Image 1: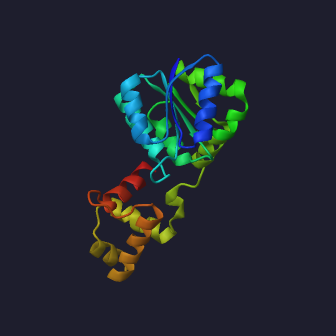
Image 2: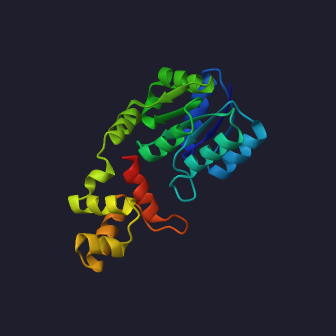
Image 3: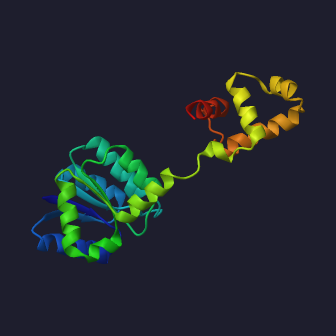
Length: 214
């Protein structure tokens, strides 16, 4: 199996290269940043990419962003993401695009060489490997409280009337509240539903959609 490794730690990059070489796999490139990773994938068309979540220059999510591009541009390239700790948001986003040929492991798992090599081969063969800690946290997230349950009874009443198409003025008239009170309720609903102002999305519509979906 032909592998490209993207890891900014020189020691870990060298260690992974040696480990896979000893296991009989071919490391065709080992790089330290996302740009070099993209260039290596384009040049070598590997079977598998092993990529760190956080990479230069910002050490935030460059690795994950590169993984997304690779999945879209070269869908036959399997991806194994390594992370220092569980970042469930990134794990969830990657898995949402399909788990075939995808793995997400904590770096601690590398210490068990046999299991790590088995995971590399499983992902390279089109399977899926998720770290038990990742699975645990994703399941916990799925069980978390529905955002609608954060709303007070009055806020739920306001949102229900918004779903009927009522304006703020109509809400104030029906609920016998001042316009400013209605505005405060609506603003609180947006905040509790994690609907932040954006250039293209209408928060009122999105809030109503959340209500209807529930």
